[in-house]
Image (cartoon, rainbow, N blue to C red):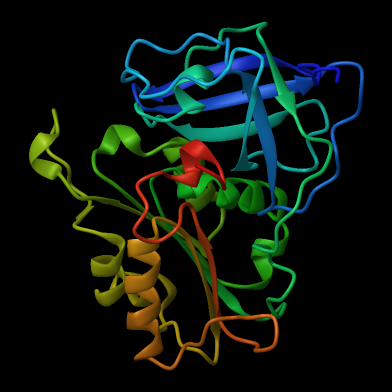
Length: 286
C-alpha cells in the first residue's frame, strides 16, 4: 500500500514560549477543506521525523514508515483560504508534538482532507451573550471564532477567559487586547496561576479560570451577571477544568448542551479525564 503523501508545507512557525507554538501550513497542490470555526482536523508526520531538543526519550519509537496523526483544533478563520493555523502545546513525552516542534519553514506535513466537530456557535441563539473559557492551548478554537465573527460580536456581549501558568503563555494576547479596544462589547480576561514566577510583576487576575468566574470581573465588564437566561458558556482545555466549571455552572442553573438536550454549556475536552495525554498536543488519540 502506498504511503500517504505529506501534502502541506510549513509557511510560518512562531514560538510563543518553549512549549507553545503557532504553526501555519499551506496545502500543496490541493485546496484546503471548508470548516466552521471551532472544528478540528488531523495533522500528521511519519515516525522517521526527528524530535525537538526538549523531547523526552521515547519508551517505544514508532516505525519510521508509520504516519502519526492526531486531531487539532483549527485556530485560523475559514475566511483565510491560503493556510491553516494551529496553536500547539508541546508534550515532551508525546508521540507527535515533539516532531511538530522540530519543524522548520518549508518542511512538509500531512493534513486530512476533512474537518469535523460540533464545538461551534451553531446552537447558540443570536441574541445570547457568550463566555469563552479556556486554559492553555484550549484557546485555539476561540481564535477562529473571534477572528471570523467580528461583525457578529456587535449583536451580543462576549467575554474571553484564558488561564495559563505564566504570562508568556498568553498566546494572541496583543490580538485580544486590540479587539477589546475596538469592540466595547468584548472583554478579555487573562488569568495567571503562577504570578510568583514572573520576571515583571503581573498586575492582572491570578489563580484559575474558576476563580475568575466566581469573581465579579465579568459582571463588572458587562454591567450584568451571566445567567442561563442570557448567556451560553464554552469550555475548552483540560477535563479537570471543564468538569469543575460544569459543576459550578450547574449550581447556577446552567445545563450541558447534548444531542437530545438543549443547554447553555458547550465543552471540548482536550484529552480524556484521568489521562495524561493532551489532545491539544497529541490529538484525540494517544
